[in-house]
Figure (cartoon, rainbow over the protein chains, first blue to last red):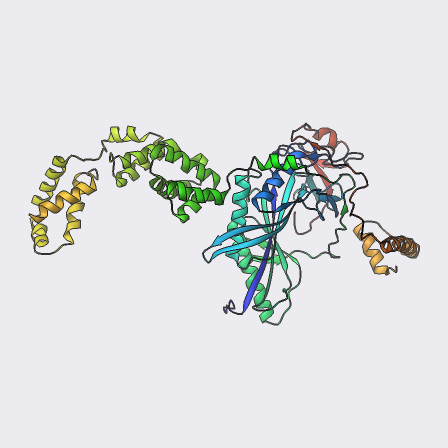
Length: 481
Length: 98
């Protein structure tokens, strides 16, 4: 494909649905647990039985206020609900209770980082709404099966301004939102299970054009990687269409991760017309100042604050601090390790190196790590106090991972304690020098790089246990004789 | 305010109401009369009036986040004409998404 990137630019806006991790539903006392038997967590209100009225869950207000604060946004009071009218069997009321004119969160922003630098993305709004149930289309003799367990589960829909320009920025924005909702503990953010869903509005225009191009909305994107690929595909598709003289149809498209394409959803006979109106069953909600202040007081340290603290408190690089702070569990683990190990830099390296590699290998989260923060801290302490070399530590780490044993136990039972006795090292060096007279002569006649050969031989003779710095020093003085 | 037959049919479709051809003209007249009334309301000067989304001047009461409803499936399924494996069965609907 021709590279059009110098002529065209993309305009991207994201709508992110976040499932709030309340115990009960937005308007009913039914449970929101994931994975229960069909229809065992749906009550009269979720089924829209005649005469029922919605009763608002106070917790969702707190969660929305926290998100608003984290997004530097305004909190609307009063905030009010509206009806979004449409018919679909997984929504028994015939409408969804959502927010229109007075969303609880409005006019915020989020600072993101990509390889090209920092950028501020506006957040238009975040509003509360209820989730729908699930339709199952297979195996019911030509009928659809309806499970209403998810109906009425609280969602926050976070809408960005169309200020995102590349797929990389879209992913950075999405990851940042993910990090924030996990820090706030308002959602588990699990994209595979659908507790965080992303729709992307994408259009393209010639660079310099003032007016926006016709946009499409791509749904069904359920991982960070797919968001990037789906948007990339959609940008290229639109540019190709326009370059070929075709027009873009405003439509909803589905992303198919199997073949990495987007395709149009069957278009409806009439354009969607949701006929929003104020929800008569719910009064507007006035958020008292004391209530908001109470919620604000429970705000945890946020990812960017934590990153800055890691830089100033532990002298980590911005990059390392950013990686650790992006995920709350990882950041907590790091801080626990530093309580034992006293070397923050070494702790950070081990967590992002050896530990992350093992976790990725076995597809485990940091909380499922087979080496606890305590044990990793002890291992790093043994490197710091000179008991073992960094290289031996890696072998010991492998053993700790597979056996669950502590570092001292392995050092003891396998005799891995670092050799730091000058005499012992000297005698090993003498043996190596005597055993390699040819190399010795070559070295002494100017072949400096053979020094590495001698170091290697000594380390080998000590089975990796000799202190490398002492080996270097002693070897140097012996070879120079 | 005049409505076209097409608009009337679209409104009926959105509300999932079947309107027979011979009732179209009388229904159109009634709807147009209602729209005229709103037109009249629109003429009122509301520049000094705050927007109102509910006639009661109260704030919505809330409840604590507690699970109060037990599993009611057997009882609720009794209301449905067709059920299988704990699911409500409805005429097949596929809208390109689930």
